[in-house]
Length: 440
Image (cartoon, rainbow, N blue to C red; front, side):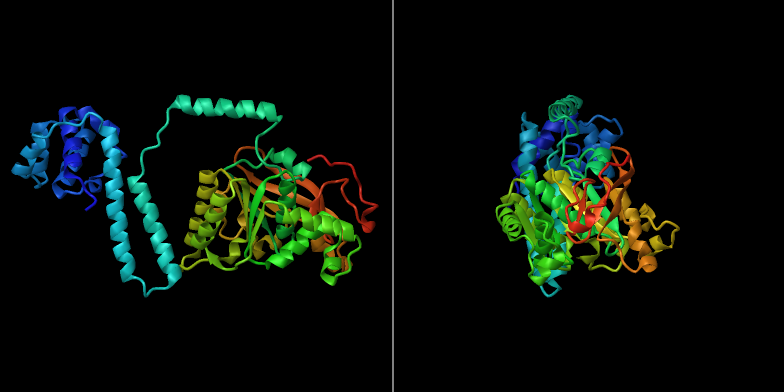
């Protein structure tokens, strides 16, 4: 079942007839792609001869198999008597498909033996095994330099027509000036201490991009969905978060407008907490398949992703690599919120640093952009007892793989739970705030 001896012989015969054909199959077929053990050994011997720049012919192949103690005279002559295949690449694809089905059948049998294990552990193991099967049997996707040059020139033309870097903006002008745009395939990390505004930055990003017609998937692992909606409605309507919580709306028509906006938007909101990366991926893939307009996937936050293993650093590394892989494969921006550790507050200015991110090695390595949030007024509360409702905030670009790092200044509007540009402050306490845009 799930094998074809004639195809295997035809491929191997074609290589014996023309040794250069091995170049078409390297990195595509592997010894285990063949079903017959003898054919596995023949292909292994062919690869070994090629690595030593030796001819892959009847004489040298026989000698190599004898050296491996794997020579079978009868099967070897059957191979030599087989007519070589001309369209070797097409037959290689057929062989890959059969090999993959054998691997899947083996995996299905394995699943039966581990059904008494924890369900999350089973899912994790199956996911890893499936990825391994896919990587071993995947068709080569090698492209020419001309292909990449053509893609680059298409991007240049798009940027020219767009009037800047092609991608998705945050809506905070100083930040967009600094980084240009979030590009499809980016993994973006938003890092800050608790109560500094990580979720508010996420909701600011959501509102801006929904207004532009982009779809957004938001996994709120920390807050229930109704609290996220309160923040989104407050930000959009200008009714303060506190008034919405108390049911005392100062502008009911603006509230209704905000509600209608979100009802008709392309926002998908999940609030199931403490999920593994594999469960998160499964839920996200379903949304991405069904809603083709998803441009952002925002996860709030890293600390609430379940890590079943004992080595947290390795778990974090796996999680960030998975998010980067998803961003690249699906052409979306993945935004992962992360908490800074307490060591960050021991510094003189208490501003975020890459070293301050929990398990920062993996996060820093995999992220394309890392932004730290900072409000000086937050750390002056002990002196004044209160923090102004609206205060200056710094969006510190700690890493930018394709551009410059630096500091983008804006305002944090606490009552509306949002970050705002200079000149956009619209509640009573904010009239004295400056409106000039600062130099970054």
